[in-house]
Length: 403
Ligand code: GLA
Image 1 (cartoon, helix red, strand yellow):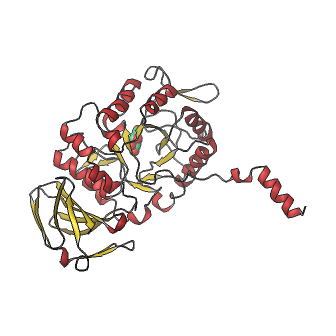
Image 2: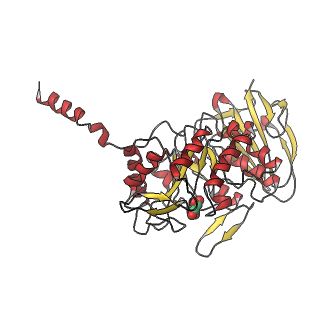
Image 3: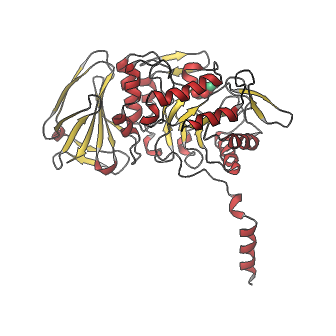
């Protein structure tokens, strides 16, 4: 046996492969879909509420429409024990976290949990700093499928290193877990997180308003249009397994039906994670119809995995295009304004070119059939101009399919 061969065998036997931690591949090949407790319930959570959310995800038709993860956000935590292992808060989660995870799994759903790279979470609960490997082991033992990892109380930490540590800890723990990076875009995670996480927040927190800034003193949360505008320039960084995350949805949390519809649609156009943040046990029919519109969900979940782009903008009316698999396209007319907007879009006057990727469409060379994804109706084709009226704060969304 040559020395080289011997060395090779030695390395194989001692498992040198395992020393290279990495991100779990093949997860989140389309943007994750699910529900998270934070937007509606903040710290006011308990095991009954989470179990009910799982039940309601099934009974509302959301599971059937593709929603998968039940994610428990901040404030589930109790104390660490004498060996440093974290436990759920005993009053709020008397059956323990493993039982809750098992319950969610028994509904055919997956379970997500929340922690923080700092010494405390944003809600003042124990963070994972210095305990990353131990916490990852705990989550894996509980059967967790998704980790949202926040960025409060991280003074003196560098984001890339902190998230890398937790990525490695998850890999070491051995259970495939979707890793959701939540550092609010502060240090441009889109530039370094492709090999670290499966999605990364691009902005501060969302707020259920159309176009406002909600001032919390030393930080702000943002309305739908504000967050939408902050996505500019980021689409080239996203793709299957690594998504820009413009934050969880506020559909059903107080905006008008038009605004909710526009919000949901624009998240789909952005190939954003579709994480509902409302009370699933208390939904109006309109909210259910929006969240379970399978035709719009199909735009979000399209296997090509390319975010849409703003093609034009005039007088508060934006036209967005999103390349889809098979040479098809989604088109959304977004009316940001307070008054209705007439559209007269002559396809043949437009040569649409993706600014970041190699997709283009010439409506003089090709004819597409048109389907309205909110009216659920087939329209004519791209030979004749598209004429319609978009109500204020609303959208019209079309799927163009090759003939
Ligand atoms: C941060 C995150 C939110 C939520 C809270 C919990 O603000 O951005 O999404 O997780 O913390 O405290």
